[in-house]
Length: 436
Image (cartoon, rainbow, N blue to C red; front, side, top):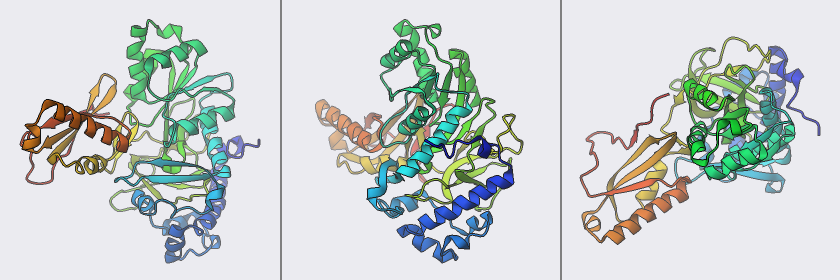
């Protein structure tokens, strides 16, 4: 199969050639966007009625930002440009309420996304002689399947281990001589803490590399991983709304992440004013997807904070490099690689009749992993009830939260007046994890 987006000529093209590719693909995306209920209203309102109205890349900035709320409010099909018979896969991610955001991919879209993921893998020096153990979640999140497809395109043998079951993960590494892991940094550190328990030494493994992502981590964490396992750890960046983990990836030089500009147009803005900021200055990452037509997405506000490097990379790729993610502009929590909004938790617990009016969400480190604790006050007559009734209620709250946020938190039940009360804005989230 021809690989359209994994192309050395494109990767090393000069900036002007790259801009021509972007403009051509942007016009094609505009044509698809005009077929969606959402953009068919939005684009004409700013004078864009056809692809011919896009004369240069500067015209992109006529288009208002698209937000997660736009996706949620147009759920499920408001941004779909084709008949569902042309869709071969959907992915969903967390919304700020119970309504998720949904991503549609046609066969061509999936093929293009796979190529970009393959390019990312290849940029790290990984090839078909490697064996990848994919320890990210498979299913509605994009991380597992998108990496899986990209690795297969490069020719790797893929072990679709998914997350959890640490003992089995270590056994798979040993039995099949895994050389590359795709994993969250916190879970990889947890795996190391369990090696001795299962009588396994790092020297018993064949690991050479790890692709780490899905949660913020510091350079010190990367170095710790590399030292503990004697491997190279490569940072990755992606989001479900942009097809998953292949939006930007480090190359063999590990000097931050090449953002594949023939597939995505990146803008860095001042999150308060919406104005562009110069390279080297921190701001919010705005992305336009140039390779997905079933569900076009333009000028999407990721809420991630980063900056673009001014200098070129020793690898000679001309795609600009994005810094590691420095923070968020919203209240989203990333817990062991899963995105969670406090409002999702509130929505669940406030529907339970026994729950009072006060609650608190706590996040802490337990070893290398994050631990989520939801503290809830009960009405007095409930709290004074039988112990078995309290235990059943605790289990019910934990199960309903897991159904909503995919993680099962620890639940603490308290009598009224125990949790802090604030006269002004309530501080619902206490995140005591060490700062990056």
